[in-house]
Length: 195
Image (cartoon, rainbow, N blue to C red; front, side):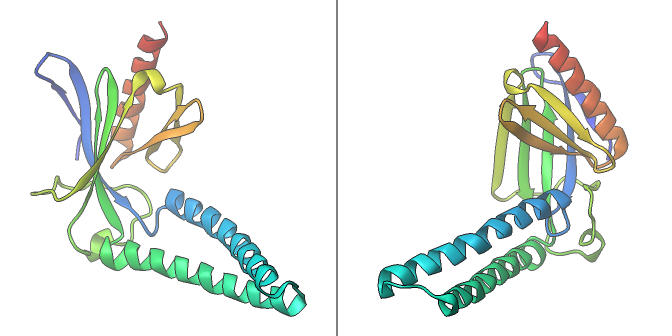
């Protein structure tokens, strides 16, 4: 689906597009999940060991072994919960509507249709038709004055808008052409903001 350049009511040009975003096979989400699970394991071990120390007043090697076993179960449960949410409940995808306005970037996330096999195994964002009806959505708006730069993730069809403290927003593009147009638009806006 091609991005649309259209005039808003005030005659201001904007760029907009819909994209399907994988959840359970998305490298960015999986990286965040791996980092969370890597912190969850030692945190659980420390919590269980501290509880043992408070309750029994001492801790030994068998107690640490039990704490490590419990931590493994907690990490496995968290990973299973992610898989349950990502695949059966979300169908391994959600839909984003991205709009680039002259004053801000606007991104709305919404659930797609129930699981459809052709859309279930994407790794990169993919073209998708606009939904016929929308349920609950989540919207994020980032004004251009908060954006310090951007990074096009090669081959992933993702543009990261960078702020003072890291990534402000990821824009998922359905194809390479849309990604190129969006990167050009963002580059133009940042030049205007810096001048």
